[in-house]
Image (cartoon, rainbow, N blue to C red; front, side, top):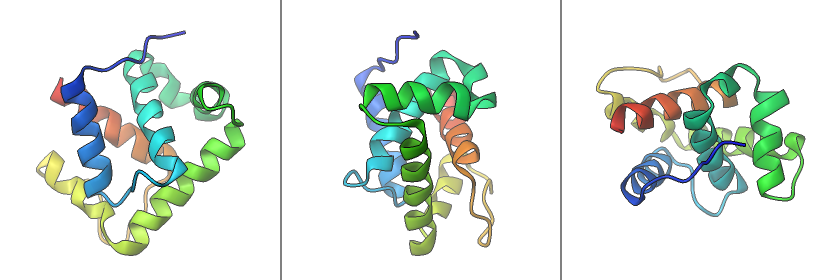
Length: 121
């Protein structure tokens, strides 16, 4: 099992990106997304097997199920997308990674966040 501890600066950056993208800490998906990115940083191959590897790992850390993790992540993305804040992610990359009418899947969003944080390291 990979070590998913992040230094404080990286953890703060991930929190800021999520909040500025419209993912609020009150949502279960917020904590699930943070753990998903931490896990994906330690095990990048997990991005290719979300339902078999990443979601079950996150679920085990939160005494939940992989299905509940997937649903909470989808809900968080839907909430941010409906508020129009998800596109703030573009400014972190410095170019357009999401178009106005493009809502990312859970895997796409986790992948984008992971890449962003990896480049921040």
